[in-house]
Length: 433
Figure 1: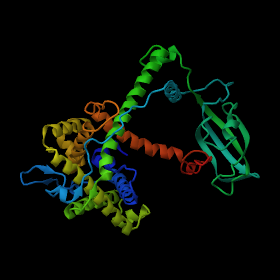
Figure 2: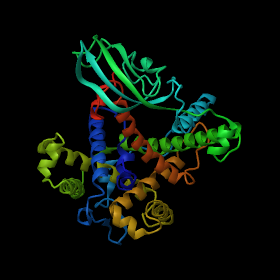
Figure 3: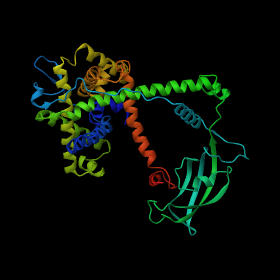
Figure 4: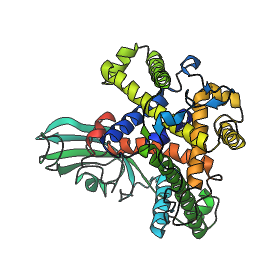
């Protein structure tokens, strides 16, 4: 997920990342989450004409829904006194050592000694050609392929065969594909990979000299202490992010819509469609062609529009209902303070730029959600004192965004792991090994 698009989708991301409570809720939440991802991808291309106008009441006050009596449309779950877990994961010595090892690997340097050989943990750049009975097979060739020895991302025997090789050396490495290998033509079969080591890098040794030259610290002990502090902050940020998400999704999941305000649903569906049209336009495509290029029929797309709209309206009804019951408004002091945080974080202090980029409605929804989250958290029950949500507000938003981005990256990495292939796309056949 792009950080720039995060604000516009904050409400949906937070509201709909729910593990279901019943099949209907699972369907609603899953569909809405899918629509959130589409929305975040199209935010950058949607022009101002696709942005909905905010609702106001008779006094001119901003509202998230068009109706005055929210109780007619939704039964909101109990949001005071819910039990939340605000525990923070302990940072272990192993976690510190693992992070240090990762940092060292990120600072690997090329081994230039001509007599040096590849060791476990080295990152090698290789060319390879796989053959069976002397014939090259599809997906078995790769060039300029980077591989961490010992990562276990290749089929058994492949990485082990590279250990001990020198830069520039070529070697035939015999392997046997696992019986469970996804390609039935290769499963259980013997093959030979001709591997050439082009170069290899090695993590530096952790010493006081390395620390002094590459970090802001002078000793390994000081450096490890800084890593521990960083991990502790990350654990705190993650706990706070989880707390806020759980606080909201607990209420969202257990609230029941009685009736959807027709105007609101139509407007939400229209916005979703407009954003999809803007994305299609960016690719010089008509909406139908764009939708079908994603493997979705127009009938399914229309159903998704409706599912997205209903989920979005449900969240807005809950937020507005709680704000009404507790005497909150989007213009009061606390909401304006949240707005200022968002302006500073996303628009360099320029409110007009914030609204121009994401739209007034998205800004209002984000403020409303964050305000309601704060209230739920402040009135929840805990096994230990509740964390200070105000001080970690910005960190929570960043952590939520980074988690989504990292989820995408982790998924991609998991799909690119073990069958050698010359192309990046073919790497996604490797993950079963």
